[in-house]
Each structure stands twice: as C-alpha cells, then as structure tokens.
Length: 178
Ligand SMILES: CC(C)(COP(=O)(O)OP(=O)(O)OC[C@H]1O[C@@H](n2cnc3c(N)ncnc32)[C@H](O)[C@@H]1OP(=O)(O)O)[C@@H](O)C(=O)NCCC(=O)NCCS
Image 1 (tube, rainbow, N blue to C red):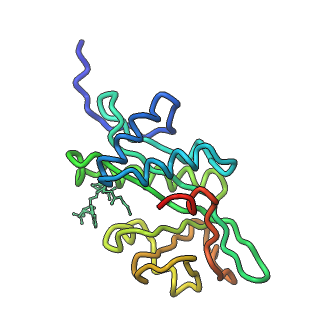
Image 2: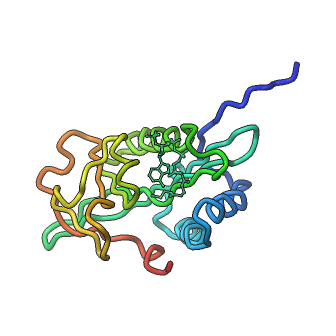
C-alpha cells in the first residue's frame, strides 16, 4: 500500500543531510552566512551532533535547528549554556508548525543531555512562546551590539539562572562569520 503520510519527523542530522541543510539555510536566510556558521560549528570541537536536528517531510530536509555550547562569563565564573542559532524552515513550508516542532524537540534533547540554560538572539515575537524571556533583565549581556528585545534566555531547570550573570562567550566559529 502506498504510504501517503506527510508527517514531519524531527531527528538528529546525518552526514547525508549536510548539503540539504546548506541549501535550506541559504534559502531561508537569503545568504550564505548561516550555512557557513553551521559548517564551521560542525567542524569545531564544541559541536554536539545530537543538537543539530533536521525536520524531514516526505524524505526531504525542510527544517534545521542548531544548539551550540557557550559560556556565561563573569570575572568569577563561567557557566555553561547553549545558544540556539541558527534555525530555518523552507520558505514555502513556513507557518505550519515545523519551526515549533524543531524548537520543542531541540529543547527536549537539550534537557536530556543535561543542559540547563539556552540563549537565543532572534525574533522577539517568536521565542517567548517556548518560554524564552528577555535576557538583559536576567543579568546577561551579549558580546556585540543588538536590540535589547532580540536577546532572550530560557531556563531548562528551575533556578538555573540563580546567581548567574555575565557576558555570553561564543565559540570561535561564531566570530569567524560575517
Ligand atoms: C523563524 C522560522 C524558523 C519559524 O519557522 P516556522 O515553521 O515558520 O514557524 P512555526 O510554523 O512553528 O510558527 C509560526 C509562527 O512564527 C511566526 N514567525 C515566522 N517567522 C517569523 C519572523 N520572521 N518573525 C517573527 N515571527 C515569525 C509566525 O508569525 C507564526 O506566528 P503565529 O503562530 O503567532 O501565527 C522560519 O520562519 C524561518 O526559517 N525564517 C527565516 C529564517 C529565520 O528568521 N530564522 C530564525 C532566526 S532567529
């Protein structure tokens, strides 16, 4: 019997997805920076394969999300966290819940792998639905200029941000892109 299901599956990326992820990001962002960033992170020692996830529909990669380890640095401490960046859905399939499925599954995997804090620099209308709140109000800073409302944070564990403050230290791969 022909399988007509068009359910979207979210899973960790495979090597065979790399090219599709590049093309997807170029389309969604209308440029190459994000696909270059993903490639650079993938080649770096900080890369967590389980946290580079794809959305697959009818065998085609239609969405992607990446979480990369960062540190929240203060003069006294360096607290581990994840940065959600980038994420993308094929333009023709946006607004159908694929991005939501990617974020939710990605956050579940982040919890499973023991992470407690996720930061994002992104659309302030989008991420609060997953529980992200303004990061500036929590004592966090970015190492670059950005409008206050685009910098958000999510606690994956209760009180994960208690006594935590400082500047986000991104891995080198993030500095090399622009
Ligand atoms: C942002 C993105 C990943 C969302 O994926 P998606 O599958 O379209 O998202 P969902 O279907 O789960 O959610 C749709 C919601 O996201 C909102 N949304 C989509 N793109 C948005 C944007 N650029 N800014 C703000 N909100 C956006 C929609 O308005 C919709 O809101 P509603 O549920 O209140 O109607 C996708 O639009 C995309 O790839 N955009 C281009 C790349 C990008 O901007 N990536 C994010 C960088 S922070």
